[in-house]
Image (cartoon, rainbow, N blue to C red):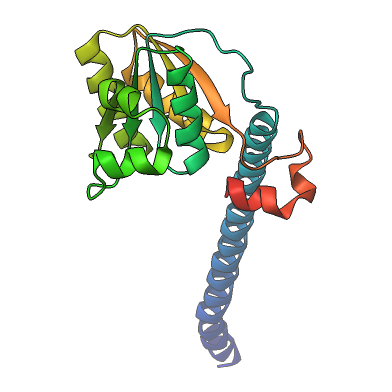
Length: 207
């Protein structure tokens, strides 16, 4: 009788032991998964920080060329008055035959744009084209590619802000395979020659 009772008690305890073992296994797997996710998140953060640091340092060393080489044409991406002024100055000084202003608001007329930019009205009338279709950098590149192809230009001066230049060159280069692109960065925000980590205003521009 005692042996039978012991067998019954042992059989009753075995399922509970299996449950505890199974729970411990699941907990161990969960901890392992959390550790892997944590390491992956840290690795992704490190890659992002490294890439951001490289980008910021590269942008911080960009300067506006004092005497850029002449090109077939000039493209300026809208987003600030200083970009437009710089592009018109380049056109007036003979650095390109024509100027494309890409990303102009659809409601802006050519006369309004000329009044805002100033400069020679005759030069603006004869040698400035306006793109109102582009809404972002990719759109700028697409519309610019059509314009360059229509005019068979082989070299282009790209005018935009320093922090916008790397992305602009990337998108332009993706579509303008046969054209030589000459960057003309306009420095509105001085990123301190690499000291961007200590400059909140520089971080705001880059973000």
